[in-house]
Image 1 (cartoon, rainbow, N blue to C red):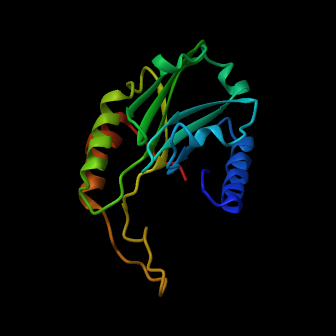
Image 2 (cartoon, rainbow, N blue to C red):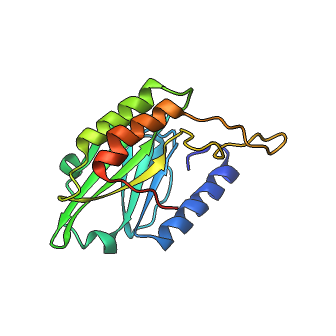
Length: 185
């Protein structure tokens, strides 16, 4: 969203706004944002936007005001928990119909076992509320490959078979299984 080339920035902005118009909330990641770069874009007036800055990463969350009316007013200091600034944040919502946690993440890239990913998984696991207390929705870029047919070679379009096995195991044992997380496509 914050590309220095105007044409690229406009195309990214149009896609983000199209997604936002179709959904109650939209997670943004790999923004490479700073407090200063967020002064430039014009965002819809019918939304609340939350940011977690990091020039190497950066995440955000856009939420429609109509959707937020289902919950108590957001107190950004209390409800927007940046557990790894620029990488992982959780918005905790509470209302008459129940509780919802929205996790936005952008995991570190790199080889299997990258320490930043393991730390993000650990922190998310410690910060999300139990299933009986809140519905949790996670959006983001996890930057690890779980299946043999998840990554292909650009030159010949064959599957590389590259996997991040230790990261996948950490995900399964520390987050997915104990918190009953299911992937939606």
